[in-house]
Length: 250
Ligand SMILES: C[S@@+](CC[C@H](N)C(=O)[O-])C[C@H]1O[C@@H](n2cnc3c(N)ncnc32)[C@H](O)[C@@H]1O
Image 1 (cartoon, rainbow, N blue to C red):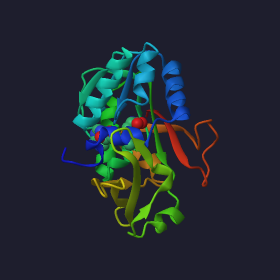
Image 2: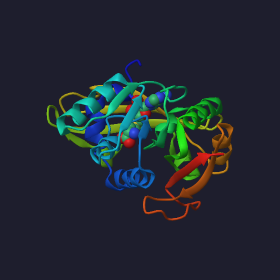
Image 3: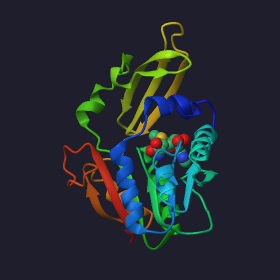
């Protein structure tokens, strides 16, 4: 993987220091299913390390060597055993099945083509044990927010953080929505007062609209059995922030 957003795993963890309700949701899914767990796009292990710490045999797959190295370091620090595998969620073969497969925090939206999503879902289906579940969360695209993505660089106050080595870091983002591809193409700028733009990286995220979501899932031989709109399990509506999807083999 060339230098991109996920080459900077420590910056990622400082900017997104972990989300309690999401971790608890996925832990509860793992508890409900029992048995083994596979996370695709596991990043630095925000969700998977707590699940493995509960005693569940866990495998994490990610494309980024830097994110995996940080995950391994954090798991080692906590004395938690996880099998970390560098791989591509679009097509993978781990040679075994799992009781829970999940993809958290919009990681799925790095797959831009419908064919990539279908191929990922097909690989997921092959890795589901009998009675296994596939769970993922993606944002619910808001037409208003997408149309705000006008290419202008703006500071995102809510994302600023303190880097122990650099001090206060501000985050600017310029992004534009490509409606034909349903992809928001962004450039992220990280700056301190002493070092403006010390990291500048692209980030491209697809939108999956509510009506197309069950269709792409079905292309991989899966079916959507439930869709929640938030971490507390409220039903999905047009104004929900999330599409939190529970799938099984069709
Ligand atoms: C938004 S981060 C989420 C990380 C983690 N799941 C979490 O909840 O904190 C997205 C992750 O997906 C990974 N990723 C992107 N494309 C991928 C692909 N095709 N296969 C596997 N991982 C991928 C990135 O390297 C990154 O670690």
